[in-house]
Length: 305
Image (cartoon, rainbow, N blue to C red; front, side):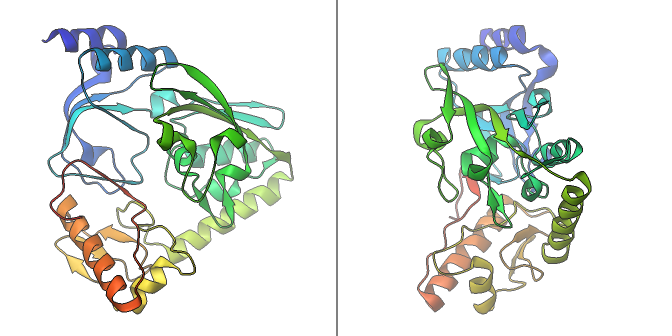
């Protein structure tokens, strides 16, 4: 065992340090090669100490949550993956305020909120991600977005400083926040909500869930919406009007149910998905002169992009 591994184990324990871990086990696409190291911290102190070790040994680090917006290369990820997941997912309720750690699933936060008769988070119930990524990307659905409900965010700077940012300081925009711009790591966030009727809140969650199941290909692995919404258009309609519904390369396919989704129909590789995305971009550009921008993140090395 190397000195580097010994130091990681001393902070996290051997069970929270995995080597050559298949990323297909940790992405909603069910795709991805091995991560050299897969690290699962359970508190802020461990995150800070692990990051210091990674810097000390010049080991590159990728931070991930639920893996719902990622396409990981078939060759995997060099260095370390810092996974903020179940080990770092507490949710605390104080009156009309909810504070949750970055690894908390959005669906869980929505149901905790409903259980305390707090309204405003119904829209996040069906978003298949965790809080850290949702804050970073200002995730949204059905007319709601994180910027509308977040009051403050606790982050870790690249220098290891813990900071509290207000909603305004987060500089939220469409699928954007200051997090990526400044290389920050989201530790937790606070929601300011309103008291409501529990039955009405649960009924809205149920209705939005019904709409998702009706319109989205949830029966297949995917990374959610593949493309950002181009100004003045809807990506799914552009793709459908380009005649690409059902277009397939290997195991990756444009969903006929919702053309805004590229799905893993069975044993798709990351290169299969990348090839489909490239073909979609080229075809939509050719037919409508609109350049689609992927919403999903490409992690690792790809031949096709």
